[in-house]
Amino acid sequence: MATTMKAVHYRRYGGGAAGLEHVEVSIPTPRKDEILIKLEAVSINPIDWKMQKGIFKPFVPNKFPFTPVSDVAGKVASVGRNVEGFKEGDNVVTVLPTRNGGGLAEYAIASSNMTVKNPTEIPAAEVSGLGIAGLTALKSLELIGAKFDGTGTPSNILITAASGGVGHYAVQLARLANFHITATCGARNLELVKNLGADEVLDYKTPQGETLASPSGKKYDAVIHCGSSLPWSKFDPIISNNGKVIDVTPTVSSIFTYSLKKLSFSKKQLLPFLLIPKFKDLQVMVNLLQDGKIKTLVDSKFPLALAKEAWLKSMDGHATGKVIVEMINQNDK
Ligand SMILES: NC(=O)c1ccc[n+]([C@@H]2O[C@H](COP(=O)([O-])OP(=O)(O)OC[C@H]3O[C@@H](n4cnc5c(N)ncnc54)[C@H](OP(=O)(O)O)[C@@H]3O)[C@@H](O)[C@H]2O)c1
Image (cartoon, rainbow, N blue to C red; front, side, top):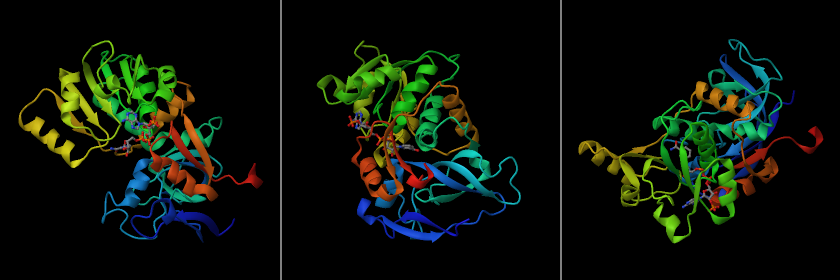
């Protein structure tokens, strides 16, 4: 086996795509509970480039150079001495800890506790999308009582930015939960989002779309807000008296609103959301994908050599579904 690999890292906060450097580094060695994965596909999430911009500065990254990206899929290359249940060649998917990153490379080290086997017939590109985006959709919907076998109470919900990485999974999962879904997206994706399962779609650039109000006039029991931050005054008129807004892009202002609502015992709530990836949730998402109950929309695929273009594509904020980087080189195909 080779001892070095291609990787892409950055050396300081800021710099965007131009700050990414292609390097040759040593292939890491798994410790006793870890797995070395030969990566086939990884998906970029906004958190990856937001970290480069310094959203968690100075805590994460706290050392440079830093190899970004957490959502990865590939084949087991080797396992640490305590790892059971995985063998070389197994197809796997995992979410690498955000603080470690490591996904924009040919190999990455994963914790065996967070690694899920991926049935061979699902392409790595599709499975790699499930991590941060899929789990955010799953957990935020669970917060409002979704049961993905459809046994929960039907709710009337709004999903914003429904064509994005999080939103496109959220629409499909909300459909499985039998929710009535209004979704916002750009004009070019209205039909696509309807096909994913939305009952009503709003073009976010129209006056009606800007209000976020349901075309059928019903108030929402909940909002899964995946778009950029909005003031509480946008949500207040469109949610029911017990309505909840799950804010997956929380800001200082939304955390302030959350505290205010708590202190005033308001029945209307704004809940800032922060994902903590868990094995069992990733397993749920892999099973749903395997069973054909959800799919991953792939916006675009780039080889590792064009990682900067993938980075730019994600930073642009207009992906439909997931932006994927593939490690398979032409000789492997
Ligand atoms: N809190 C957490 O733990 C957590 C976890 C995951 C993600 N997030 C955050 O959630 C947000 C969404 O992530 P993502 O991966 O889904 O992003 P994404 O894939 O980059 O979202 C892009 C999509 O959003 C659409 N969009 C942009 N502005 C919109 C608007 N005002 N109304 C409706 N649609 C709009 C775009 O449509 P057009 O191209 O038509 O403009 C595009 O299809 C990001 O800010 C991310 O950082 C947070």
